[in-house]
Image (spheres, rainbow, N blue to C red):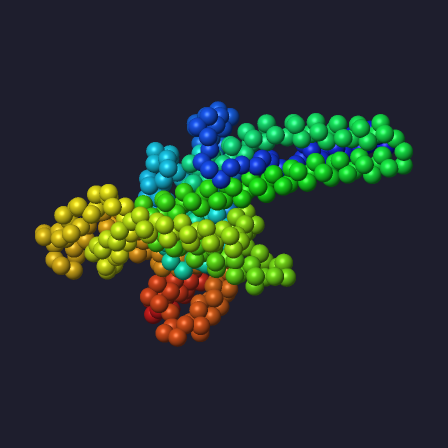
Length: 379
């Protein structure tokens, strides 16, 4: 019994996930997480993961969707805490609601997340959150702290096991298992604390990046609220979005996101610009060069009034391409043409004014996919 229990203690301890409680502040300047892997090695591992996803057919690779996603992500990255960090954004055909960041600035987004979002600002909010995970090196910091933390916990567990065995008696087995359970509980609690801390930090920095990029700072809390509502709708435990499993959302987190957004509004001013898709109103930092850019204030005198827009206007906020990108994703991520046809029928029935222009475009693409070129032209 004694060797078996010692073996169980070792196995359970070593199999535990990386754990460590963490402050909600930014990492201390002396963090050595970056020493675990050089930036070049991180990029290498990220590239290896992307190649494996491609080999398994999990990527959704479309030039138009890729350009939309990469342009939005690059804009956010350039306004993040590490603007020189290279990023690679890619889309997965999975319709589960999820997004993730890994080593080397590689950030993946499921098609299901874009299909669930109601506007580009919400997708940008999720991307800015994932970018913060990269800039704060949360993956490497988790590994580093686990290396420092697991050994003391393991030794404490073994000491408790040995003490229980030496005490003898009928209760020694129960005491041993209690020691193992206690150690595992400590590891799990530290993992929970670590996750909460990282998510809070990523939310805080993400909202700042969102504001600097000209997106709606309320988008993050709004998306979280909808995800939380979907979780309550699945109270039976069925089909909980992957995003909620990897990014736990609760009332406190939503409230904090709203509070940060309100504070961001106090620290910014409204700027109105003319874009190819109409007038855009956004919040910018008072020191933003766009406020003093004469092209923003007056428009380009060499262009007709209907075509006047600024370079800054194009590089800030929503691109105006979201609705079209979402429909393209809807078509490309569908399992079968039949399911896609049913999906558009449901959309048409559920909307008072029928399909939007972007949805009509998606319907035409779905006809082409099903081999109905003539019907696609009619649509």
